[in-house]
Each structure stands twice: as C-alpha cells, then as structure tokens.
Amino acid sequence: MFLLIFSTALDFFTGLKIFGSKNLIAKKLWLWTSICVNLGFLGIFKYYNFFADSFADALSLVGISTNLWTIKVILPVGISFYTFHGLSYVFDIYNNKINPVKNFIDYSVFVSFFPLLVAGPIERATHLLPQIQRTRNFDYSKAVDGMRQILWGLFKKIVIADNCAVIVNDIFDNYMDYSGSTLVLGAILFSFQIYCDFSGYSDIALGTARLFGIELLRNFAFPYFSRDIAEFWRRWHISLTTWFRDYLYIPLGGSRGGTWMKVRNTFIIFLVSGFWHGANWTFIVWGALNAIYFLPLMLTDKNRQNTDTVAEGNLFPNLKEIMQIGFTFLITVIAWIFFRSETVGKAFEYLYNTVSSSLLTMPDFHGSKTVLLLIIIMVLIEWLQRDKQHALQLNHLSIPGTARWGLYFTLVFVIFWFGGSQQQFIYFQF
Image 1 (tube, rainbow, N blue to C red):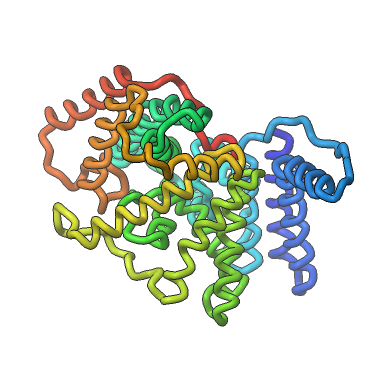
Image 2: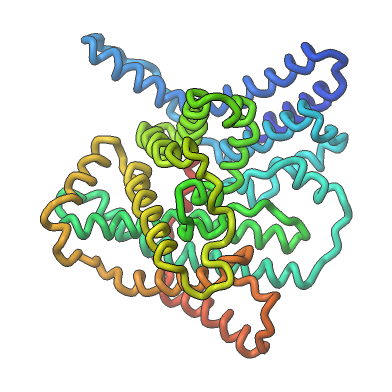
C-alpha cells in the first residue's frame, strides 16, 4: 500500500510541476524524476533478483563464483499496472494532451480504481479522468450490459480457464512422460487457458466498472480470430499494446525511418513487452519470437491489411480466411509454450518432444473432453458475436425475455456445475 500511495502522490505532484514549469529543462527534470522513481521501484521489486541471478550466471561461465544478495519479498500487488497508469498521466501532461487535475482524490481514483488495479486494463488519463470528474447517473441499460459481461467473464475464467489449468499444469510439469499429441493438446489448452483467464478478468473488470457508470478501455477483441500476427496484437491485451505504441514505439521513431530503424523499434517494443510480463528469459524469448513473426508483415507493408472484422457480413469464413486464422493460431500456440515454460531450455525440450512419431498417436485427454466441448461452444458464441464489444452484448437483438433469462440461468448453472478448482488469475503475478 505504501508503494501505491507514494507512486500516486509522486505523479500527482509531478504533473502539477510539469504543467507549472516555465521552461523545457524544468519540465524534463520533473518528467525524468517521475520516470526514474516509478521504474526504479518496478525494477527493484520485480526485476532486481532477475538481474542479480543473470549476472551471477554470467560470471560463473568464466569461472567466477558469486553469492549476490537478493530480495526476499513478494511482488507488490498491481505494481506493473498502476506504474503505467501514473506514467501515462505525466507523459500526457508533458506532451500537452491534458492539464493536471487539482483534486487529489480524483487522481487517486484514476490510479487505483478497484476493478482495474491488479490486472488492468491499463487506462489513460485522457480517457478515464474525465469520467471520474463528471457527475454520473445510474444507467440501467449499461448496468444490465455490464452484468452480462461479468457473467461471460466468470464463465471463461471459472469454467474454461480453471479447468484447463489443472490439465495444463500436469502436462507441462511432466512433458517428458507424454506423447507429442498430448503435448500439442497441452499447448492448445494453455492458449485457451491464458485467453479465458485474462480476457475473463477484463470482462469482469469492464462489466463492474459499467455498473458505476465508467467505461474502461477494451482489452480484448476476439484475438484468436485474427488472420495475421499484426491483427492478433491489435486484438490481444489492447491497452498494453497501445501503451507501448504511444509511449515507446512512436517516440523511438515508429516506422517512419529506414529499414534498420523499423526492425530495431519492432524488436524493442516486443522485447520490452515480454520483459514487462515477468523477470524470466522465457518472456523475453516469447517477445522476440513475436517480433520475428511481425517483421515480414511490417517490412512488406502488410501489417495493417486486416483491420476489419473477419468474414464481415457472412456466417462462415472463406477457405483463405480459415487458413490464415489457423496459421496465426498455430504460431501463437508455439510462442505460448515459451510463455508457459519455467525455463527456455524446458520450452525447447517441450517442442522437441512434440515433433516425434508419437505426434500421430491419440493424445491422453486427461478427462478434457468436456472442457474441449465447452471451449468449442465458447468459440462458436464468440464467433457469432465477433463484431460486438463482448460475447453477451445483446442490446441489438430482439430476444424475448424468457429466452434471455434462460441463457443467463444456463450460464450460471454451467459455472456452478462445471466450474474447475479455484486457480489464481495468471496476470496477478505481473
């Protein structure tokens, strides 16, 4: 709590100083004060042990044995998220996009609004602060839509993600003992676990905020229907992707420079994004792999060729779209193996064991057939609603009340009947 209070007070005070400074040097001084202190706290609590251990490992390669001091403390809750909230605020003031708020309570609510504090979405002051400052009246239609989104988020988290987690944990912990087909099943189930876990939380957060008359930034837009990796990253963890784009990629020059600058900036933004997720080389390799996926599209100017809704106006995608979605999902699943594995070495072993003659055998389903059926149902519902803000957005449909309530109670029943054993949210660790 001390870190949250200190960070909030620091950025509130820094914003006033940046706005009130008469010259550019003073503005930059206060800006860098906020950057260094915020990232300093983040670096110490989240990354110090990683750098200390990596440095010790590097020294051991040349025969030098060290015993560096490490920090024995749990990661402060939500530090990655509220640090970025505060930084976006001071950046926007420095760039003259907003004026600082004078009410400390309003600013504190912006930083620590409870639905998004521990796992996002990462909000912008330009979007959330005006909503906090103005008078809000209860809107029944928004509240109903918010409850629907909460219900869908609970279904994805409790039914899909939590059930997948048990199977995924066993397969990844004992990958040497399973066939290649079972390892493929584990990787696919993890892909749905992390999607349903994180997007489920985001749905709950957005729906809860809507009950209070607050519209948070959308964080997921059905990313597994993407036709290329660039579209995937426009639809996955949108608030983080756009944060890095606006406050890191564009200031570095974006894609305006030559080929070398484009390649450099692409790798920087993906490597930093990977490192943001955790202090482990697996996340860095995961980020680098996505950068490699992204480069061919960027270098051929095809990274924005799929900005519309897939198969818009049609019930089914065409053969080309099916192949594009399938290939994008395949390379995404491969990258997720690095994200999930404990070490880079284990990730490569997992992949090596996958590509074997046992790949063509029947997998050990671990009792996952029911979960796979529920995943298929979820995917079908999201496909039908792929042009909406969330899967249970029903305002545009003329559905009888009996049918709507039947749907709600069916989902509640499924949550209670098929809900898995309680698992913590994956992104709470970040």
